Amino acid sequence: MTEEDPVPFRHITVAAAAENPLGMIKDQMKPNAIRTTKYTLLNWLPKSVLEQFRRVANAYFLGISVLMILGSYATYLFISPLDPFSTIATLTVILLITSCKEGYEDLLRRKSDKFENNREVVVITFSKGEDGKVEVHETVKRSKKLKAGDIVKLSGKMPAPADMLLILTSLYNDGNKCYVETANIDGETNLKLREAPSALAMEVGQLIAEGIPVPELFQGTIDIEPPNANIHKIVGTLHLEAAKNPVPIDSNNIILRSALFSNTDWAYGIVVYTGQETKIQMNSLHAP
Image (cartoon, rainbow, N blue to C red; front, side, top):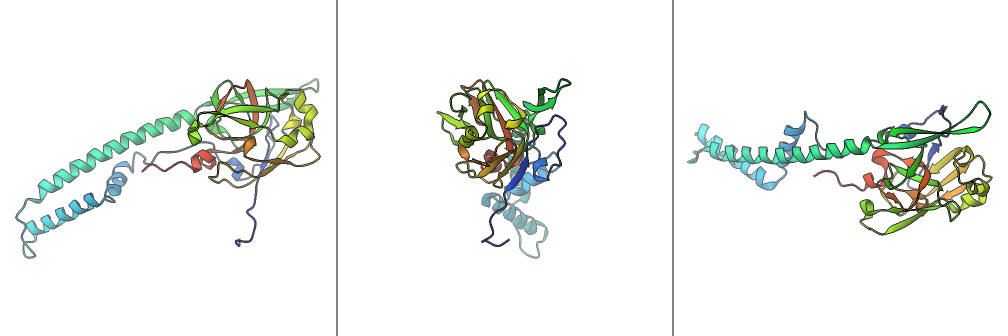
């Protein structure tokens, strides 16, 4: 691909059917699990010790220790008047204490990841009953099981489990909007407004006016830019089967992962980015 070629958009199929008869593409199947840990049980000690020698002081004392050993046992090179093991023992104790500290911090990150990945989320699907009427199914899933295209219900005061495109809220007759707190993302504590795409009301306004989730509000596809760290700009298009025209998407229509859903009774949205590809994870610093 040359620099002049446009970046290909990601194509997402919305999982609106209860039986989910979708031929999922590779990107859509990426898990929503996050991982912020640095070590495993097997590589913790060697990796931690090796990385400590990136510090100039530790590398310096290691070099001094090697020279002192040579001076004690290879006396034909030079003679060291000092016992090398005093320096080696001190350096070893410092390395072990630091490794234990880093291991403990990594354990805390692992516990936090486990809590986030196992948070309960309500996923919506639709099916037709025996009488031909559409039935709405609410299924509780673990956050780590979410995938792009899933329809998620937010209610009460809860963090968004993934980056979601807002479709319908309890304020459907007042701009189809909701409020979120983004302190976990940008440090700002004031409430921010998020709303469903404005063109959605023009295309399927009658369905929105009913104030209930129906398949026609979700059945379709989403074309959205590949994952990136820019939280202030999102470009995409929603293609609903019930709409005559494509519906443009921007950052005001997206609830980012970890944003706290607030001051709104409920909302429904479609997952667009999951796991390590969410905006907050792409902006997170790796463990030092």
